[in-house]
Image 1: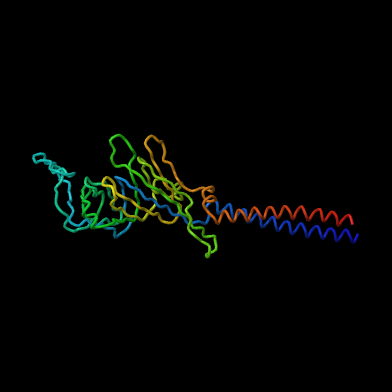
Image 2: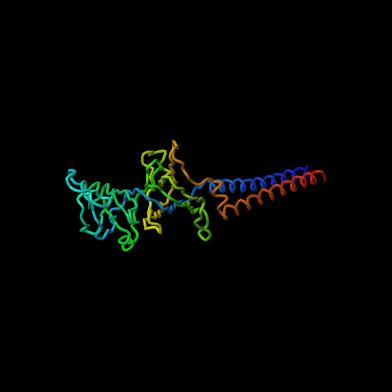
Length: 310
């Protein structure tokens, strides 16, 4: 009788230890699943592209671009077909052509512009909304002036490239993107930003930076704010765009001619597992824990049976 009581106590103790082991494994598995799904991570999206067109909507109060004394083409109240067209992209019959007096375009909040490559490798800015010039104004920044001015930055929303319909010239020519994540659950000493997904942008794709955390609630307002700049490229028929989204749940929306819906590019658990050395190490540890638990289980219960027989 006394022997049976000791055996029961022994078995209960072993079951308790095994339960604790399985609990640790379960918690570890849940932790790994959460990490692989991106829970608790800070994500940013970076794009770099060469393009002939970009659409920018500004989100800052003090946004301004220097333009030096570049030509400014203001829309005429009425067409004047009695005068020659003139040279250059600004038709003198449609525009009053002068030089910038302020040296800047003040965009302000909700400013908006279409930016295209100029005929000489410079920049043609079509004003949609600004504090300096009315809608429809064209600002022509030649390449030499642009090289003096330098980068033109923005904080707001951007679309790069137009779909490749017949006759369209405002195409994205090439580029690449990276999606980076910082896992806040890791210890501060081993935290690091990791590239979880990357790829190339192809000619004819129209891309936008979107916020997937808002897509289901506000389908009409899913563009995501980004910081970036445009800069002249080595080639004369395009300019360079570099952009970085705010921290959140960004994704890349890609439209291509003939597709019914845009393709949404964002990381999944496979991307995280294959790209993160930390996750790979944790999964290895988890696999070792399972193996050890199986070994301990096989070792404990036969031992208990032997004790009962004696």
